[in-house]
Length: 194
Image (cartoon, rainbow, N blue to C red; front, side):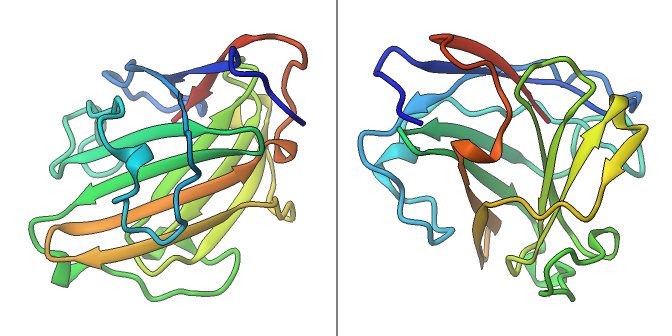
């Protein structure tokens, strides 16, 4: 599906699942990428420079609702064909990262991971969940009924590349527009992302 230059996606960090997480209410406007990023997980492409980043994350595990112990940043870009999400997962001790899985639909609960939930209707009930770990494993599922139902057999069309260095680990997601169900013909939309 082609989008004209007026198409903007406003992304609001929301809690899609019924998790008692507070403080994640940042807004971020997706930026149109003049040139698509190289999908290499390095995050050094021009489209990721000087782009607004979501930074105020809180914990979902260990100490729910408290500020994250490590700095995490997320930026969103798009073009005619894809939605791009860049993730900076800084870590003071990257040698201790846990990433044991590489297979598709891995058990992400055992690894350090980043979970991206996209809610195209911003109804906080339905969406898709994409998961990666520091070595680029992928897991995905559809979410329905405010997280009460999921389809773990869904294998969406998307990709991710990751890198690890002495500052932490970094991920670059690419998701074709056709992987989403969303309102067609609306120039500006608010989507939920968590």
